[in-house]
Image (tube, rainbow, N blue to C red; front, side, top):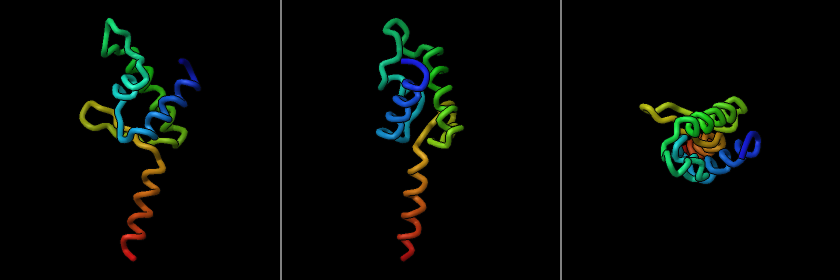
Amino acid sequence: MKGKVLRDRIYEVIIAKWPTHVSEVARILKMFPESDPENKSTIAKVKYHFDQLAREHKINVKKIDRALVAWPVEVEKYRALQELLGNI
């Protein structure tokens, strides 16, 4: 997988399983070569797509310790709606 197709697949994984981090997405998409289960170039590729999705305002990202955690932007909308409805 490359380019837009890979980015769309990464976005689908983030929507299905959030919050999630870069290596977990790579594991779910089976992107790691068998010889190197934590390949740095694979992590960098997925992180690049995380950054692109964040620039497109599709996901929110936050660095927690050394992990980059992502969740869909819609989740923030649900949280705000819950706060509004919770006050009624």
